[in-house]
Length: 198
Image (cartoon, rainbow, N blue to C red; front, side, top):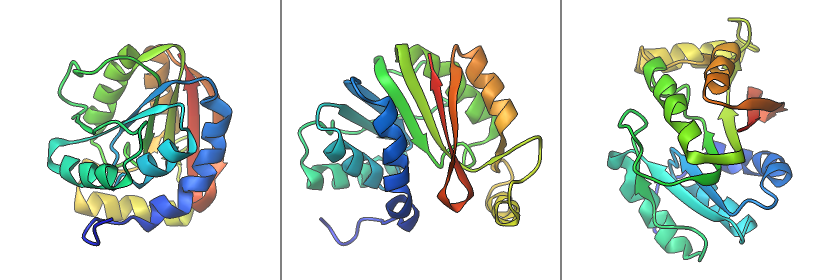
């Protein structure tokens, strides 16, 4: 694999805890759309772990070359060529999937982009399919840890439109998009893994 490819230590650290949740919810699934694949470490790891599942990586156009390089290097038969996808450009030009997964993306997006994500995502998940979101959240407007509060300040310093999202607000958006919450899993490093069914 090219040495120049970006590497996320967080993705390396969280892939096994995330996989343990995915194991419960992707049995029988045949396709998955990942929003915001980033370094594509998750895409490569999970596609190898779920060989009967076609994993469709996506990212914004400016980031898609990095995703493509790692996917080409991995050369997995069920890891599709990545697609450019910006949640703010709707309708999304892609088909329906058994599941949609995204990790560490909602707090990077603006609030308007999070709303656009939920406006579109219900149109791309099969009935009975799953929506799986990993990342840090606030509850009742409060941070769960001091480190998450510091992380929120760091995010806002980089981009005032970003920041940790309220679980209740996100849940309301998911419900209006036709999803029912199944699990709210506490994960390492003060993160959550939220699972909805359509």
